Length: 361
Image 1 (cartoon, one colour):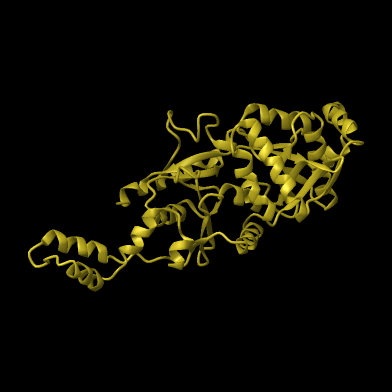
Image 2: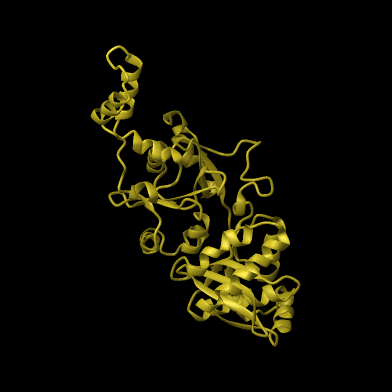
């Protein structure tokens, strides 16, 4: 029962556990219901189906805080200079906030993280993984059988590497497919932006004229400091306010997990009122990810000022670069581009795993 509670990923998982009853137990249950077995071949066949053992691999578990160290160790071993947003723990916990599972195989050192697309859409999503295309496909087929999920979306694929995955059952979106109507590839619709921290902090030249203007406006108004536990209610209120403006729950649902997470969190105050909240999560020893920036609306200088202070903090800690992540809209991407002048862009796309569909009954 403990395993069932932990792996609540779908009702189909519970069905699979029921199918793990032995033939002997299944027969006793049916006999107790006074079902005649001798003359009913169909029932006998169904009992055989129920008797098939579907082993629950130790590799598949609910994501826990221990996996942060596991993720960091694998990044350090395989990609020690990574600047990829998807390698940040802060991104991972946000992208797997619905139905968080991970698969780890110590023999191959393969690590694959799973989430659900939303609270309503139980399509499996893989936002981050470390595995060869062949091993990834084999693992996804196993997870499909365990969860009964017919389709899996693979995020954060470098478009230059798509052909490596096609022989193993992956495909690109069809013309009529998308993540949603507003952003075809979610926040990978527009590229991740890499910022050189030294250049931004120095803030020299005509490229940074607009940023300097915002920094000048905010320098006497706001206070930047680390987040504290007693700030929780104020930050939740800020998220709720943003939700009320957009008539959705998108800000609370996609950011409240950060409050208790092992990430670096900061708040911006205006007259002792919290008006901004930022989150960073380190990718490697040289690059960090800016995972969240939530600000009270109506103050044009607030977001640039708060983001700059966050970047300066990370620069003082010894980081050379920050990844601002991808964007769902062109407007968001251009806001970040115009202010912070990225030195590198990382394009990402989605693939769909479909070969395993025929395996799911």
